[in-house]
Structure formats: C-alpha cells, structure tokens
Image (cartoon, rainbow, N blue to C red; front, side, top):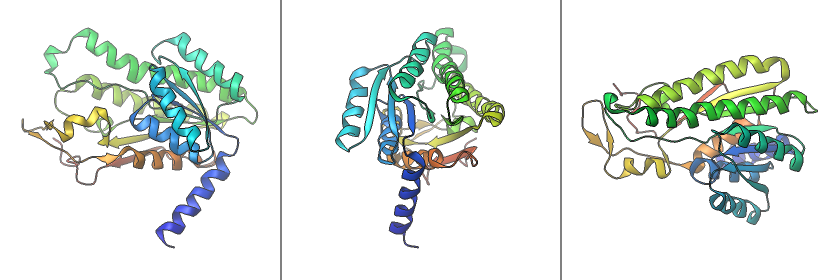
Length: 268
C-alpha cells in the first residue's frame, strides 16, 4: 500500500470512529495542544478547547472553524478545582458528552541546580503537570462513567523525561514520572467502565518550550550545551489522533514520538 493510500485509509477510520464524538484538549492555545485540536477536528471530533489564555484559545477555535470543524473555547486553569469542574459541566451542557480528554496542559522549568530549586518553583510545576492531570482525569471519569454509551478515552501528555531525566530538572522529571503513575492507575481503574487511558511521551516537538533547543542548546550530562533536533508539533498531533481514534476495546498504553536524531538513548 502506498503512503498516500495508507493515510487515506487511516483518515477514513479516524472519521468513522469520531462521528459525533467530543474531545477536550487542555493547553489548546498553542504548540502541541493547538495542533492536536486541529488534527482531531479534521478527524471529525467536536472540540472543547481549554486553557488559561482565552485569546490564544480563540485563535485555535478560528483555525478549526475555518477548516470546517466544530470548536468551543473555554477558559480554564487546570490547577483550580472549580475551574476544571466548570470546564466539564460546560462540555456536557454544550456537547452532551465527552469521548476523549487530552491532558496536554503543562509547564517547564529552566535547568537549575537541585539545591537552588525553591518550594514555589516546585509547587508550580507539580500543580500544573500533576494535580492538573488528576483533576481533569477525575472529572472525565465522572462524566464517562455516567454517559450513554458509557466510556471514553484519556490521553496524557508525558515526556521523554518520564523515562530519562535531563540534568538539573528535578521538578519537571518528578512530575512526568508521576504522570506515568497516573496513566497506569487510570488505565486499571477504568477497565470496568470502558474508560481507556494511554500516554504519549514526546521528544523535542517544535514549540515555544523547545526554543532553547534550537538556540543556546540544552544542558547535557557531560556539562556541555548542545542544540538538539526537533519535530513539528503536527507529527505529534497525528499520533494523538491515532490513539484517540481506536475503538475502546484497544488501547495504546504508552507511545514515544521523538526526533530521530535527538540524544535520548544516550542520556546519562
């Protein structure tokens, strides 16, 4: 089968799975979140776009609508319990159900000697990258268990750092390891309710968070700084669409999507 034919076959399957399906994407105003929201819309999903910057969300919303898709921007802070509850209440009120949650919202932190990391810096990373994932997952469970037909899919944005840390990244690394635990526990607890959960671990997607990889370079285990290759965020989005489009009887528990030449296998 040619690559073009394979793409058409995949696109057709995705559209069939996504018919009348609703997806929530957190951190949908830029980067991987925005590209994934657009890709999911192109696959036939109706989108709820969540994030803290309503202007950025509306830009994503406009892109989706210009392409003929359906999207609704909802301002949400994933670290705030009430805000997350209202996000899901809005999704039910406006779209009737939630079939997919992409827990994408997250923040990074500049490399910093471990003993210099402040409690505020630690708390900020954990609040967004761990507690935010938990709060959204909890609300998704509440909805997916009760809706008819029952079930849905949760996809967590992990990281290469969920497996191998970068130097001087204790808060971010700890957070992404925690996301892996959340993914495993959610996948287990969701079995009885047709709730699937998987994780995509991304290596160097081209976003604002990876600007330094193409500029000053990233700190390496030997103390040097080197530029690292990146991949377009749209390639990550294609992978998320694949995960989201599977029937609930199948699940990608973990997937790694990375720049081929990045120094991942050799870290440490």
